[in-house]
Length: 243
Image (cartoon, rainbow, N blue to C red; front, top):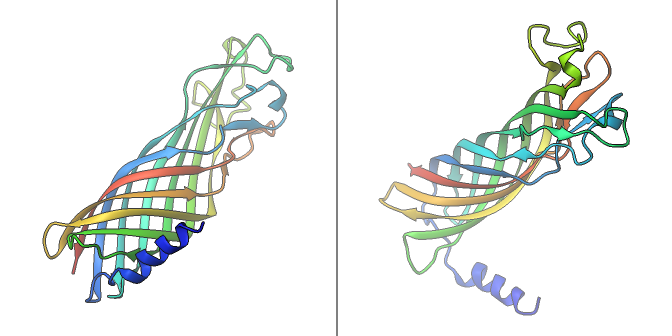
């Protein structure tokens, strides 16, 4: 701590403010959202039979678009939209031995699509290399989750007629009712921009984002698929145009 505080002060106090002229900017983002939350699970009447550790969630790509304003003193505000998608691992999992279906395998094919609208605050440092500008950032906003999931239990489903219980009667698998929900989201991050021309820069961006949880609606038996802890480490490349 004794060495960290002088270093932090040096970064903020000894560096000159970046971007001497106020300006608007727009940027495009593309990268990878590395899922960092808990496994997906099933909840409800059948919960005692579901796999002990739930279902692994695979990471996915992300895309974004932002518009913002630099105040000319190193600080900037940005309104940013990003979208990403997570899916459960498709590998069948053994049932919980404590339940009544210990000889069965469970497979939940779940998909969670999340769009975020974030208000991000930036501080950009002006370094000795004029074209290289690192920054730190933090944001708050809203996450809109769209969740759907299908369930397969083998070999039980080979003989079970559940056509009257599924939310999707034309689907060969048991289908949970899809659900849309909105949750509070927050993020922190850092990155850098490298100025190619007076107006165009490219960069790398990292953020840790937390957007709570999501779940399908309840099926006719009172069960649902749940993503109980949606968090991610997001790494992306950015292209920025400054007006």
